[in-house]
Image (tube, rainbow, N blue to C red; front, side):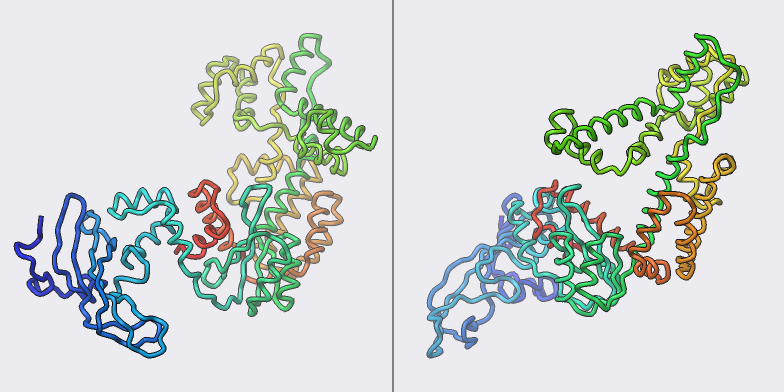
Length: 541
């Protein structure tokens, strides 16, 4: 179907201002257009009477020959558009020019060897940046822009890198190509909160080389990794290194949880009453085993540690121990490198979490009040938010029937206690505040730990770096091994930690970009090569 009853010029008959409506067609004359199903085909010719030679720049109007080019253009009304452009080849009359003939180009519409118009290439490139290959090809097809996944990725790779800018405050962090195995480095311009570059590894030498190639960095925000500290020191020795406050708090949380686990047994109340008979003793033992949930794990960890250490002392290697004990390489490494058995038991003694844990104190209270119907108690905790099975509730409460009263409720988990210490007191529920107060009264070590955590929180949130040295000295002599280990790390990285607790800089923008990199990687199912990933990270707005 023709758009015009005759083959006249669309631009002249309808007086269309193509420079406004379709600016990329301003340099051509559209002579005819037809619609055939889902395809719009337009015939056009270049408007100018001559053209400039691409080699010497001299203009020529002497025609050598003519041919037709087919260009894909942006869709119109959801239909694919093909422009059939009649192109002339000119003689170059400039003496000494290596080009004997050359083909004319339509300004804004064509380029050498291209089969797409610039608007279409820009659309496809933005789709590829947002969705990568397969997903981008599916979306392009729905929009009437036909392109294969490989073509889309080639468009991304052909795009130039963003222009380099002076970075004065730089954020540095790592991201995983394969978690636990291969890592890269992302560099963030903290002024714009945009990626400045991606590095293929997280080695100190790579970061140092980048910093030397991009002088002007005055502040470097980083985590506690030693490689980044060394790379920053070698590449930008005059820059101020700032340890991120979130990483400091996260490190303190890890050490605090291990310290709470060390003293968790101090919170277990003694069994009341005289020595029970055989049946009651067995029932009490069953209940105690259910309350702790960690005895099996502790025993297994102890046995494995003894077996690994025995073979290691005999001179056997990691592989031989793996084969003899049937353990993984990671487990054998962990058991051989542990400084002591207590270090391995720090998590084992805490026990595995149970979905019933938050409701156990309520169950003990109701049982001691005389409610011994397991069905009713299950209904009550379900109304309070419990989402577990009835079988779990029944197995926990069944041993109580052989006892005169329910045993004392188990103490809160080490992770819960640590969370109460790390949170602001105003954010705690009244029951949590009461539990934390009882814990601090029962164990002086945990009371001291909570006090040191609170003081460090004041230093961190108020940027009181001048109090750091006094806090470090007090915490290192408090008799808490894990807290002493944390302060040792602070002393080894003192200047960066002091700057992090004094200056307003932080790595929040870096962490946000790391999450964006994870999203981009998942779009490509982890198969993106580093050059493609770098392009998408740097060019995606």
